[in-house]
Image 1: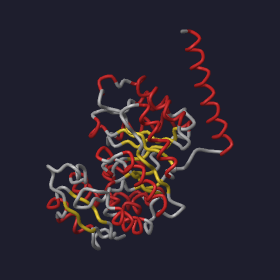
Image 2: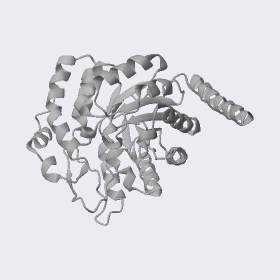
Image 3: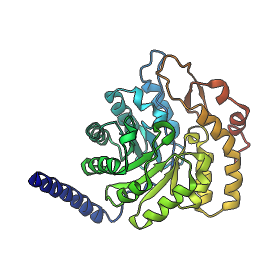
Image 4: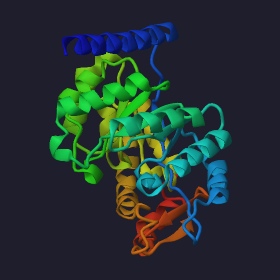
Length: 325
C-alpha cells in the first residue's frame, strides 16, 4: 500500500512539474480576460443539432468584439447532447471563428474519468481552454477535498488550460472558496467562472488568488460592473447573445475606469438581463417544454422556451437605440 501511494505521489509531482515547466516557458498563463457569450445550440424541428443555423450565428458572433465564445456551457444544453454532438459543435465553432477569438469548451461530466475523456476530445476538436463544471449528482459527498482531487486530475491530464465553473443555480453546489484557492496554484488551472452573483465571495477569491495570476469571470451581465470593481477580468454573459455590443461596451468602460458611465449602462442592462436569464434556452430537447426562436438585434437566432417573456418591452427597447452609447 505504501509503495502504491508513493508511486501515485511521484506521478502527480511529475505531472505538475511538467505543467510548471510549460507555464514558465510560455511566460504566463493564457489570458482569458474579456466578454464571452455562452452560445445556444440550435436545433431543428426533429431535435437534431442545426449546424447550418449554428454556422449562420457564428458569422454574426465573429463581427462583435468578444474575447471568444463559451461552447457547451449551460446555455448550450450540454446535458441533452451526445458525446459526439458535443465534440462536433466545438469543432464547427473552432473552424468558423476568427483565429483571434478563444473557444472555451464545456467538458464537465459527473465522473472524473468521463471529464478527462471529454476534455481530451474537446482539445482535439480545437478548444483553446476548458470550462469544467462541478460534478453534482452526489453533491452531498462533494466536499472541498473531493472537488480538489477531481479538478487536479482533470488539469493534470488536459493539454489545454482549465477554467473552473461554479453555477449553484444549476448544480445546487458552490465550489468552496478554500478549494478554489488551492486549485489556483495549479499551473494548468487559469481561472474561474462564478455564476453565483455573490460579490463579496468574488472579491475574496480575487484577493486570495491574486499572487497566482488567477483570473475570475463574472457569470452574468447583471453583476458585471460590480465584479470588475472587485478585480474580475471579464464575464460569461447570456445577455451578450442578445446585446453583445452593449455588454462589451460595459466591460470597456470598467477597464477604462469610466465608472460613472459604466454605472448608467449597467442600470439599463439589468432588466433585459433578467428577462434573458429567466428565459434561457434550457431544455429545448425536453419535449414537455414548448420552444420557439427569434432573431436578436445582432442577427443571432436565440432559442427560447418562453417566448412571450423574452419579447418583453425591456428587451425590445434594448434591441434598438436606447442602449447605444
